[in-house]
Length: 168
Image (cartoon, rainbow, N blue to C red; front, side, top):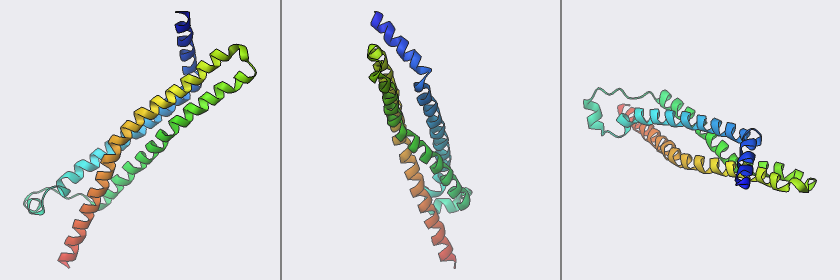
């Protein structure tokens, strides 16, 4: 029971130390994910009527085609947030390792508190790996939408180019 209290004490103590940096970083990654997701969903929704409907249906409906510049700008914004998100996600294991190294360095001179320093090292590694796993999963969900949007914009732009060439 005393060991459990020790472990809880170390974990809570670390949350106010180096591990807090990992949590702030996770909040930033979540922010970038949410913005990239929102922008890519908006882009997907605006492309849905112009890319997925056959041309004969589009000609009979009053759906206004999306502006090419708006589509390209939306894609650029979504890809920008996604790029920052992916880069932040890749850093989590490194933050965990850095926390481990920072906690293990004092062990060389302080053998008596070795167990305490070892627990500190493990919590940093633990949080770094937990957030890396969570955000890697979210990356898998978002990357498919980003790729689909890029392909749909290319199809939309090609259709518009073909229409312009036919009209000439």
